[in-house]
Image (cartoon, one colour):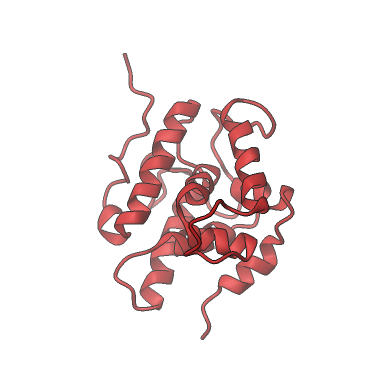
Length: 180
């Protein structure tokens, strides 16, 4: 029997040392979600789903809540999780078993610097997360870095889910750009 888990270990070859432990756990959850959903690759919607489940800083960006608040996520995060759960059970947004290709990055999954088992858009988001962390002098990318990387591709699956829930993705992406 062939495994449905995308290749590349729990995070991806050569990625683990460049991201925080918390982000590595988030990425591992996205990998498990992709396998459960029957998807060949982690895409940006898998990453968004895992970020929403685990990263309070992302919650704050979406709902204006204090990331230290131990309470439940706000209404927008709840709505987003609803869309993503519908997707995982095969209802609503239907992308299952297709490769995410927003057109914003080359469609070839094995592009130089690509991560095996990741869609081109998810690979680009991870690359941007690592660059964002490096630009701010951090040794490892965090969840908010990955979220900013996802938002940089306004045509990816995660951006579509965000827009459907009422998030102004352009405004949020601008807010997350580093100040130079």
